[in-house]
Length: 569
Image (cartoon, rainbow, N blue to C red):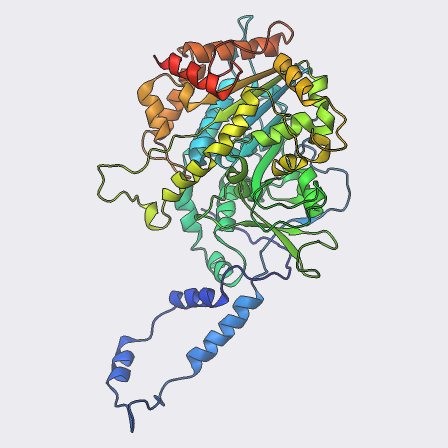
């Protein structure tokens, strides 16, 4: 493993993360303890004239050292806090990190809008997303020739683990298709499988012990999240030749637009303007639009690995990713002080990546819905049913549970279940424009031009939007529950959310994707894949729905659940 290069970061005045005393105590624990013989001599020494007499032989050096460390710990904590830079021009320098979809010469069907959402779920989601994307490159076409549906995708919205696959695809190149810039990575099955199979937890822990990281961790704002971002950069998002980290401007212009989703974790402020507002618990995207409006910052300069890690900083295991609000004045509650926006795992606001697809469809007063002949939304969902602890285990902890207890993941999944169903239902039923209050739009990070309930909305009414979507939109839910092989499906639901794999877990993911897309695909999934190919090949031929299908049949979630139950009989 190569030694990570130092990164230049802007310094700003910021309150330290955590207690300075706690940091110093942690640093002292790294040093050598006093010699035991000296402790024994001190304990055995007579107390002097009185029992409470001071020990005159005690050196003042430890106290002095503690004071010095405290001063340095407090003074240096703002270093390495953030890396985003000020916006110099309103024109986007990274147009592929944007909600505004670009025209790409390689796309064959310009009048079909194809959107791809990749859910969260650690390495489980990353590999399931990557395998599904590779399957989409070879979809059997209605004319007997395979179709590259992935090449038709206009935009990818991803969360947490799914962001690893999304960002790698968006920054990589096809081997043998076009000249590949020197030092850039390729998208092929062998490379992707190798990258996804690595134990990133072990690599992350190992990177803690680089001398530079030890110093930065204990004396600056550099934290666990920064070390994991460094780990992802060293494996996914840098140049293998030079080691230079990729930035958002380095995304492959021939790939779809990329939206990486995180969640705002700092206290709400600056809420008067919906575009500029920073509301606790709402979606934050690493796009030109959100960086410019919310931070006055340039997305093109931001490191790709840090954006991916911000999307995947699930609580308890990782700290916030910090961004500087570079507005002048910034508008945070403590006027005159620098403001910071702390973001964490996108799954806490939307673990599906679908809310940002709503914004794409509704932006500019639903222009995309009006202009597209067909709208295809493919949702790759690595959601697992929480199984709980093994009832036969006296001690349910795994190796990593001695560092971070994984039971909080089950608790989080349970709490987010309702929000998940609400978002899914609007896509199944095609009621994504059913907003009655501006506050509902703000909760979903929709600016006024994408909010049906805003006073300035100039697009179709909600019922007209629903009618248009039911006529145009095909929604394909690629999920573990679509796998009809019972043992494989059960194995998929047993894969935990972490950044490593146990034996047999990657094989289960490959088997699940083959059950949905392969030659022996189950009937319900095969019907969806065939309709997907027909819509790409001949958009005006057929209705974008398979009646009665649990994965692409439309209707409500209740109807979907009943169809799924009948499929299993």
